[in-house]
Length: 65
Image (cartoon, rainbow, N blue to C red; front, side):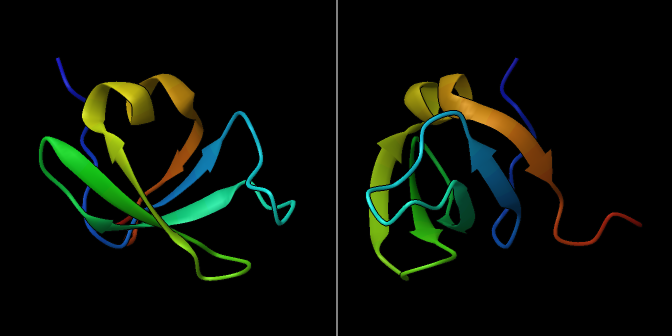
């Protein structure tokens, strides 16, 4: 079953981005995800399967929901 990832959620990946940051904001969802580095703003496209394997920590946009 796929993870419940939504636009605006923050994810921490296992490996860091070349800028040295590990946290990304989800910008687009679907079969392919677009995530934006919270440090440098670079956007990266990843398939759902690759993204879910790389996630270390998931923080929902609004934890009350």
